[in-house]
Length: 360
Image (cartoon, rainbow, N blue to C red):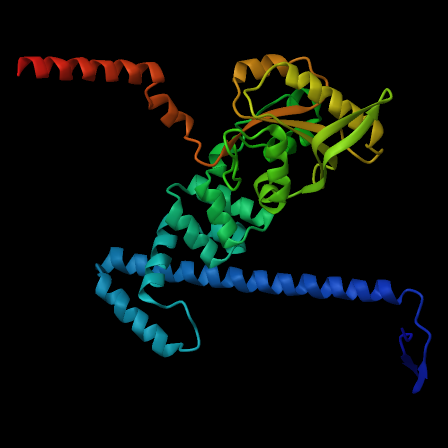
């Protein structure tokens, strides 16, 4: 490869300044940052414009009784006045009105909603009923950089309701700042409906399926998880132990051990996880890393049992459940009849049918 040629005083030179690569890297960073800020500013201006148009339409309808036909005329006139601009269809004007009605406070537009695209905001309007949830998902979109399709996926899988449902001892075993962030990364149940597992699947099958669909798995775990390996070997006391899944979380600055269980949580699971996290702390953790966190993923859990099991565990451990394809929600499962109830009903129907035949 030929060396980089620079020109000095009109003469070609093969000498590259010692800090040229760093200088070029700095320029690239500045340019990318400026482009991102420009795009964000343009997006915020567009969302603010749509909000103002929506506010104006809303005011005219409330004060002067303008009807739906006026919006159709307004759409035609705006399209004619600004043929190079998109977004003035009748349906989009109605969305602007709904947007302004849902968020009358412009400070929310500037602080939060203007940082996501108009199409993200339309998804929030269409799929959610309360501003509390809308703003929560908007903030998560900003933090995690979700595309519109990723946002819709998280809404449809009920992420808002799943975050915070896991049980952990983080508050007792981690500093407050670390504990708060660690609790935020946990959810329950995790949505693994993208897996194709049969009823006879074993834990190793479960693990392999997650690794095979690692992209979907990481999306469900959330931003910050870096996958380090499955069946990760650790040697303790001359004996080899293997971790189901090992991750590093770049925001928490710590290792995360995940243990997979295809059964209901049992108290002994927490002791095993405590051993794993302690071993990772001694064998892998560096001085700049925070304490290792353990996550036990179970088919189901009893909250009281988990709380007792974690009470005196010194290592930070969380316990969460997961949902596989075709798994019914717990509320629906509770309303379904048991096998015994079905048998009783079937016997009753058989007796009634026999009695009717004798009566005839």
